[in-house]
Length: 409
Image (cartoon, rainbow, N blue to C red):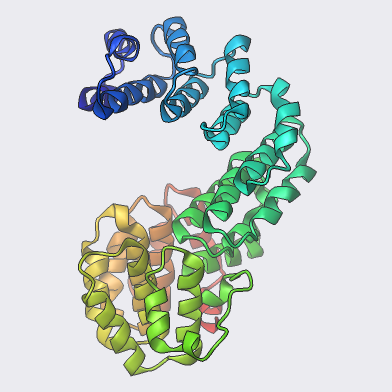
């Protein structure tokens, strides 16, 4: 398994032959063997057919009839990465939509990527699937393959589903389809900021490529609010507190750690509206300090909540988190940065200026720009970012629009 995984860094004909050998001849005795074979399929996909393309296609085509559905799904993905155009293989992939064990979304996305128009009738039949994630993928694929944007309204409606994973699927499908009219809807959904920002960025990039004039004052406001991420800007899809107990401080601190962001954003909103006190801030901070590990989901919402309730004793902790968290926790970094801005912690300006210039992560850079300006920006990060290599950051830095509108949320 480790060898197959590491070979992705060493693409060559020799590596390709070794991976084919593993896929075709490895004796499957244990789960480890099965996973090693699956990883070999994945690595071949990462080579994108650079070496021995015909042999690789033939090998992967055989895997499509494997008894392990997960290996089949990886083979489907690998063939899409190779952009295979062999009709026999494309038909095989399409037939997998009749399988009860293979993930239909993986198959549909591959058929869309490979632009297999003969799959349209089958995809149309799946648009009414009882599984909303499958219906979403099928509708998006049909919309693109038939060049019919009206079909995307089905996917946009799915974004209002109360199920977290269904909404995530809808966001992914809209992004893959490049349907930028849904950008503002995605920005306000109660899903993780990382997912929403990734989608919004791709759609804004696409829109700007198609028509540079689409960047407007409204675009800036949308992006500002997306990164500021105030709970009043989030559509909770009807979720609300039904009882006095559900509005309690204790209940809403617990909700901050829920994996479903809808509950975490409801908690943030409830804390802002009903518990904006020193006591609440102290309890929120204490809950974070008592966690036996760094709670990936909860930490972001804790950081933001400490800013919203303006609990200034948390400033030193927030600054430390901003300074020390590694890049993979950039969403927590930006959460800490914006909380520090809300707290008026001017001691953070030097670090905001440094990180704002050094990071390549657009969301974090954008958050540093917002936070720096709210704190007075004596080092003038905005001027420094006017020549940033990221066109979106440079465009926002050059704008005369301030970030004061965010303070009214």
